[in-house]
Image (cartoon, rainbow, N blue to C red; front, side, top):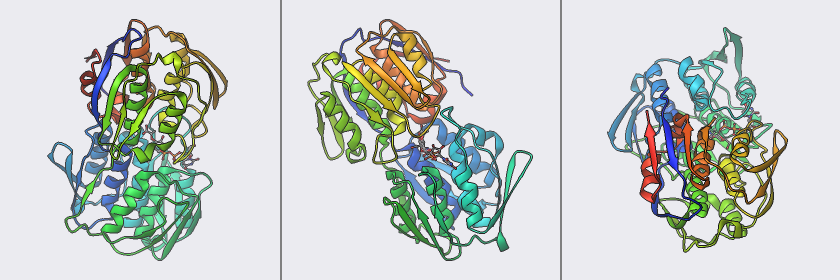
Length: 431
Ligand code: EPU
């Protein structure tokens, strides 16, 4: 793992940043699309693919399975599943990338067998896989655990369509069972599924290549099983990353007088836009851009708003950390209720050491009183989104800050320091 650091200079409390940031393709859309190649008999092209570390991890998993991925040009990749010949997910990669679990459904559906280790990923909570194991069993597979690995075998090597009711809404479980259903015998009905835009985008692509899936974007999805899919030259165009969009919008509200966030999909961020407007930030919402214009107010003139993280279209847990940094600068007390992951407020200790007034009530709830002047310091980001939140904290804090573990930011944000520099941020990467 690379051990890069960022050194970031403060903006001295002024809204010095300005310009345009172009949003990249969505990490969490491209990862399931890559996994879906297991369901295909031919190759397909993906465009607007973000050049991020998680893409490299996925490529390692592909190499282990026999799938080829060829870069055509910046952001354009061909995926060729002709050589697919294994149904075991690599242990090392899987530990570093929770999203590797998306492969389980399509591999089991294609081979009738699957071996995989318990997946790792960011340090944001327990991240169990019970929904996956329960679902495979409902589809007629047997699950055994040996040497810290799961061995899953479908009856007669063929998954059966099933009725699966998820106890909690899970993005990757929804995606993996959609893909499992595509090659299963008969109909699969998934209830209480996640409704994130990345799921709708996956389903649209699979349907355009011969799948029969209805209900994406609603709580119930039906999949009629069939044969391998065929792209026949269809191209997957990655949707814009709504979390990157939201991250820059929050940064802009605190640090920029004028900021244009372009190449984005504002309708995927309704809740954030609404809350920032409530708090006093003026945002112009376009078809594919968001503008913060003439943002001359002091941050202390913005008022506190409370948030509760929620499955889409609620407030995304992935924007909770950047938003907490925002809340340290506005006037009043806000309650932040993190309902998705139990470890996802732990980073607030770092903000407290910078001078923020934050009280944790339990693992899920914190109150933030603002505004407070933060002091720059050395920070260790424990996950992708906290990494970006610390970049914002460094900009609003007094003095210089060092952010360690830049690897995490690189996992999810394409070209981050270039994008920041173009807005006027003084940022250096140290290897
Ligand atoms: N859960 C279970 N059992 C399971 C699976 C999940 O109880 O078998 C629980 C989790 O513990 C959590 C809840 O379900 O409390 C929701 O988690 P989910 O499964 O939806 O998370 P995920 O699919 O692993 C995706 C994103 C995350 C994002 C979450 C929540 C991808 C590749 N990852 O993870 O993205 O935080 O949904 O929206 O799509 C990120 O991009 O930085 C990131 C962490």
